[in-house]
Image 1 (spheres, rainbow over the protein chains, first blue to last red):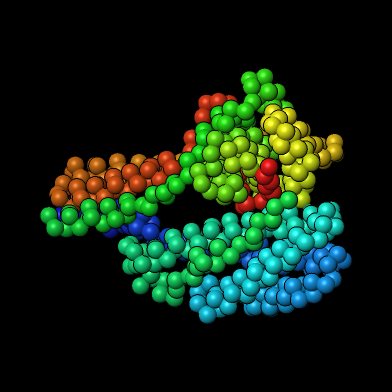
Image 2: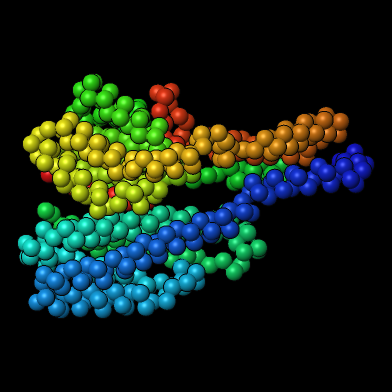
Length: 203
Length: 255
């Protein structure tokens, strides 16, 4: 620095440099990693909410179908079992950074999706069931929930993409390797699971 | 010279931002009725617009009718929530927006419901309106009739009973007086003061280091203003989205 700068009083130098440093550092994304992390976590709880919502709908749906199609016991049991398995998977904030736990969660939910798809497919064979108001209402709620799950998953994937990219690219990688060393990349849903959505039921 | 180059390079790295790629294109929000597929005449559009404006006055709920030429190869569910988010239908603090989307080409209709209305306008109610009021008329080729009847039903559901209106009306404070997304005034003042201080400092002390710092500061300022321009500006048509967002709630039908 030039001689005139050093001749400035200590206070004046601090007064100029501290705000500038703050500005430079925040401009360089020191806050970006925690911000993206919180966003991704919020999106993750959205995903969990919507899966929970689906799980809550299932007992009612199973009961309604049972009333009309008792002979479809295997399909009904498969749904009940898959729901029990999906809800028994322990999920917490650590799940998204743990590939094993995440895979387990994803597989359980995919199994439930498959079982539900079969249940809705066989219900096509029962005209009385198909025209039952309760069933129609539950079915539309289930369709809506599947769509919400799809949206929540997409939002989560996007948030995680931002976060993971920030961890691996400049300037984020500097902060990741110094200040935020405990931050791990988060898991994404794989695309193939997205394709396992419920078959659209036509009226 | 080298140090100066490093400074400028560092500032440029800070500037680099990922531009969100938009794969779908959306029609402009020209009013409460956006008739891209041209299935309504002027009188029908005006009547619908009035009814929808009435609804917003009573409940602050924003309901928008949109007919689309094409879904651009995606599903109506996928298009619907993205359109709702793009237009920001619904008040920002309540997310109380809803869309009635008609895609005559693909023979699809959807009621897209914002987060805040999911409890009032449930998927089952939406499905019921689609199946009983809209689809029978669409099947007969009567688009204006189906849309009109669907909107009437939706307005009834959203209006609820008189008490409900009163309660909601009492809650609604004139929306969007403050825009929390804007850069706060004090920050602008601090930045301007810093800039002026540096100008004075540079004029008296001079030197290449000082100039490089100034340039870095300028670049940061540029990046700040660039990011704040990212928000969509409201068109002059008198109607705009209130900042609401959507999470895929609602129901669809086809004919």
